[in-house]
Image 1: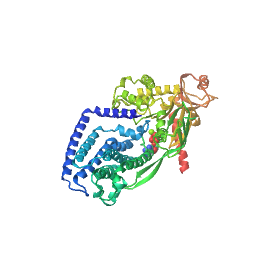
Image 2: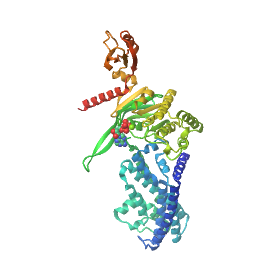
Image 3: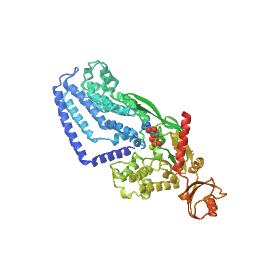
Image 4: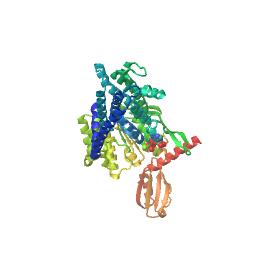
Length: 264
Length: 328
Ligand SMILES: Nc1ncnc2c1ncn2[C@@H]1O[C@H](COP(=O)(O)OP(=O)(O)O)[C@@H](O)[C@H]1O
Ligand SMILES: [Mg+2]
């Protein structure tokens, strides 16, 4: 089972490397950009004053955890936004004619390995951030540090998938999905406590973004939530991820049934 | 059990038509409008109809790509959309417009990939590929990237790709559209052979009547999403009264033959030197020619089979009349 997807992946990378020069240029430019990004982020947070009741360094930990979750999900499922193209051209037909999961194929056939750079970049920033703050390390804290980016990336992944699925109903949905994915990335860069009103309610709790990094970071740093949430909420990320994935799977399945192909 | 069973199958599309500058009007297009069909194992079925009749839409429902709006459908005993993955292993599909091959890879690599995708046992894969290579003449372009193949070469590749996993049913949507003469011949000859082996059920949509005449014993004709004929080509001719014709060239101008039976004069041309007779049903050409030979010197004789284009044009005209009566 796995081998079929692996082979598709290899084939896809092989066809990409056919255009060898552009592939190389891609890799080099991505690496350079990542380096610049890292420097920019670190400089930015050196000058960032306290935010929403947290020190700049604490904010950097939250931001780095969120960035890692986002870049992981972007690497693994970010290309699901190409679904629009397959729907508009009717190429999704071909995907449905193979004995594999349609979503699985989509993720594999447009896999962009250059996005690995972003994950490495996030890891570097997180390492620096953890070095800059005092953490009373324990098994629980290490566990939460490992689990959170993985579960958090599943939350982002669910939003990527659900957002892209809108194209089954509305092909010209354009950048609508990005409002939630990239919007979510930007939202999670800062502590939830800096937001207020319906905006906070929608993004932090409705879409579950508070669980991507904020609550786990509170647990890691051992600081109480200025908004009064209990500290154990830091463990909620996998649960929220599971919920998000269930919703995304339902939306996806309904979407596929609404696929209408194209007239010839 | 029939391999395809469709009952009152329907597919509606909602489209928004522009009216005026900003307003849009909701419109429901019935692409497939109550098709009932049974196809038995080993049949070769021609699915024929003018552009926009609903052929492709029907095939997309049969193959699990589109969910029907209503009706009952079983292909290989499975409900196509909900059992899509199982179904893909039992069917082969060639949609003329959409390639299932990997654009940037050599044809050979696409075939190798399909072996893994469909988990085809090595020996089976090799045997089927060898057969297709020979029958479809693939060897000269096996190592060419798909994007560099001509349409005809690609179509031969697509056919192979659709058969490698040993499907029970092969669905072909306009397999000869836009092909050069040689490729068209190759594809038809290949399909004829497939039909004669009788293992694979073939459902073929086309608007090329030559495909149908050579390949399909059974013909389903649809118009505006409805079946207007289901049966053999002969049955179609019988139903619409198409006649075989005998054309004779005469030494002397034509004069009425007294008591000529089984045929009527349809046209007299070339100042009476060429006469066309249409034969009554069940009358042989020989019967008429013998009668004629007794009266006049025949220089040349030709027998013209009924014209399929003509009978189908008549069929559409009749179905349009029926529609306008029903709606008017
Ligand atoms: N995805 C679609 N969206 C809207 N209308 C469609 C779609 N696919 C087909 N149609 C319409 O349905 C009708 C039948 O189309 P189709 O099945 O492609 O016909 P055929 O293959 O016989 O030419 C046409 O009127 C076509 O415009
Ligand atoms: Mg068509």
